[in-house]
Length: 228
Image (tube, rainbow, N blue to C red; front, side, top):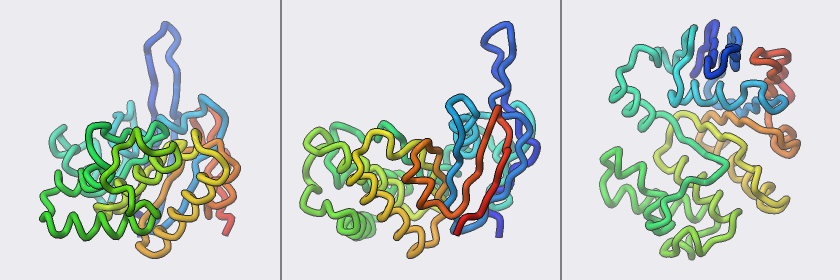
């Protein structure tokens, strides 16, 4: 089953006198449970494509359908609600809330969804156990290493059990050990919970883990290979 179906997608920026085609006619289907990396040189359109899939940016032309829901048909409040219940985001900069503890960061999305306190606490404990940070639950982000903060960001994205995760350069600030641990965790959760992962990356270590590699150049897909 296709979780994401993209048809004739374009994004043109007109911030200068010369329009820039960041995404230029992409057709793409991504199915439930995929572990996919979108790769290519800087400026090829990876982040723009990811932002449009996540509903953070609007296409100039074309459509994105997620589970049969056309994103461009949502009003702003409807799109926010759809993202809240279906999409988990992992950003390069972590985006943890500094005034909240690890526990509070991980349960934040679930609280917005209206989950009960008991359900939140149970899921937080499960996620912190899975990332090896249960003993850090009452600490704040500035008391953690970069690798630990990124694991908390992944736990927050996964805690609410979204249908898919968008991870934009999630290993860019991490050392080799932290990267390996993080990728092993995401691969395991992908297999155990059948969540769909889409990475935007330059990192060869992410590419080696991915089971599908989609290569962009000048806003177009030039290669799409299933590798495992």
